[in-house]
Amino acid sequence: MNERISSLKSKLIVSCQALPHEPLHSSFIMGRMALAAKEGGAAGIRANTKEDIAEIQKNVDLPIIGIVKRDYEGSDVYITPTMKEIEELMEVKPEIIAMDATISKRPGGLTLDEFFKEVKTKYPDQLFMADCSTVEEALHADELGFDFVSPTMVGYTKQSEGLKIAENDFEILRNIIKNVKHHVIAEGNINTPEKAKRVIELGAFSVVVGSIITRPQLITKSFAEALIAVKIIIIIISDCKQKFILLRKKEIKMRNLNKYKGIIPAFYACYDEKGEISPDRVKALTEYFIKKGVKGIYTNGSSGECIYQSVADRKLVIESVMEVAKGKLTVINHVACNNTKDSMELAAHSEKVGVDAIAAIPPIYFRLPEYAIAKYWNDISSAAPNTDFIIYNIPQLAGVALTGKLFEVMRNNKNVIGVKNSSMPVQDIQMFKAAAGEDYIIFNGPDEQFISGMAIGAEGGIGGTYGAMPELFLKMDELVKKGEFDKAREVQYTANEIIYKMCSTTGNMYGVIKEILRINEKLDIGSVRAPLYELNKEDMPIVKEAAKMIRDAVVKYL
Image (tube, rainbow, N blue to C red; front, top):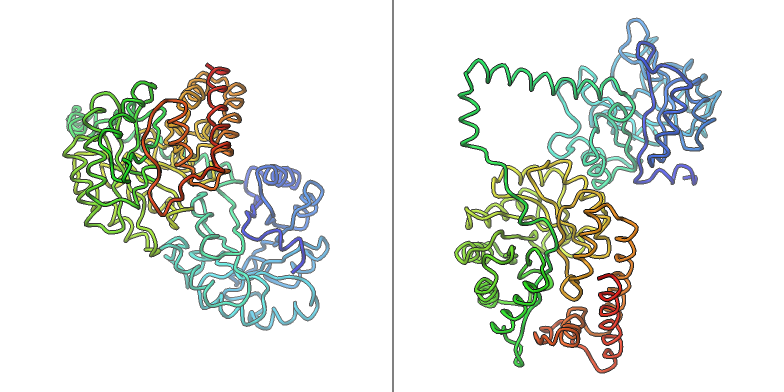
């Protein structure tokens, strides 16, 4: 495979097409459309007619999938249907030529086998892509020797009528990928970023997206129809003399999410000299966070070393926290265990002691299907029916990512209010926020990109290093809300340098943070629990340097 084709792997191809009856029908416009697609991150273009392709080639140096759409009397095939269209395309030499590879009736009575043999004989070095509408057609095209296979025509032929490409988690696409030898390019009604991401996760070589990007009349229509629907609802409400409004006001209350908006440090495990949970030290750390002026705390999570603690340990932690924090801090308690029974027990206990919300990662170790993860989370939530529920997305540790589809399923649970998003792509925050809307909150997880997460849509932050330097994250939050991003960026860079320093020891980072709290705040909350590695004497100069960096930064920025 040549380098230009390899560059398409796991990337977006944008279909830039406008038919003669459409407002944007113009080779010049298609060239500009392709340029806009490239600037947006497209790695390739799909285009119709040699004229459009030639213009596109003047504007972008991207691989092109070329087609010619032409109707022939007595034939249902219209994508590069005859040798005439092949010859036209060869004048501009797109990297790939796509053609209809369905069982639909072809011009001149030729079968696909006959037509493809003729084409391949004349142009043996040209790459060809099969636009198919069923799994069987894709398998046949693969056997014929097409270089790429695509479900482009699903739902557009008589034999695929009623089928939808995204149905049952892209079942048609999955079956094609599983059974063909050649690369599969996903195409056909892939109209959201979540769908595009999912098909790549399933193994598609690349993905083609068209109308939802390049046909403004269709995009506009979707907005206009939504507003028409609103108008109809308003008329119905008026005719019913607002009875419907009164009923819905009783059923629906906009959530008050303000208590979650701000800086929420992850709470550290507090041990005595024997390595057991120390209620007194838990209370002391809670008082510390109250004095620092943070919005809340996130207990029994990764920073709380939850996976190394028993159910009894975790109950003792939250009981001790709530004795001090109730009414003074927002408290989110992470309750996930590696079995549903213990998780539900912790959830019920959390509601009993009065936390504001519970949170849970997905089950780890076994890679469970999404329906099993949804059941796990919903079972946990059912044990605390009057408590908000936050999904914790941390795929790099949990081994499972929160997808758009799973998030959509979970939003059917009235207790779900948002996501603590610790995946590294900042874009995930935007996607979750766009999908859920204003009645949900998305928290930024990765501390090193706090201001990026807030800029793209997060309204709060939950972080493991906040506790070592809460002043810096409170300052960043303040600057972001003021729109002073240059200053916020400066503080972020400083915080990141401190984080890098804290991560450079032999001992575990949470051990470093606890030692920093001992040095800077005279707060002793013990060490870490094995198998987390304790600090050694060689680590102490690094720890002291990090502690000084924090003191200097607090003086500089506050």
